[in-house]
Image (cartoon, rainbow, N blue to C red):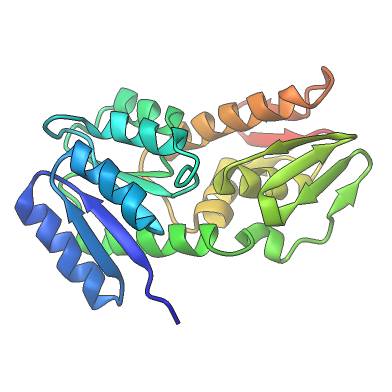
Length: 233
């Protein structure tokens, strides 16, 4: 059985080492980088299963590294947890817009980081959680393609990120009914991320824009203000 590889990119040597030691205690193989340039090079070289990425670093910052990872065909789907001491909402939105999967503000508890690492790896290394117990694969014009994290509407196919696929699948299984934000957080993320309302909004916005590309003008995802979201088929 192969060992799961995790890349830690953080210029704070104490934090970098703390993360490394604790992840190794969990059985992961950990690679370390101390600036963005080195981190991106290691990511391409080692193709890790997950990247833990600091924002504020010398040479190249974490946002730029995340963007380069998402634009690199070999490692574009690698899940990313972003670390920052900033804690500003705009920084989180910026990270999510670049395709970051999760966000943790310094200082953080190492136990919380480990929980998030496990949740992300579980979600991205197998068929998405929500689809593992799905009842529907096809309904009317929509078909789910879980092996490739894609959705087909009529004859058009759109690839999604693992998180986007889980969100869409949960809405799909409950089409016509509202799914609350709390339920989305519980079933998709598996824990309660901080600033959860904005987390959901950003991912829904990206998901909606992708679905709109293949919807022939039909608006499938409806926002129920103050409540949650609904898929109309």
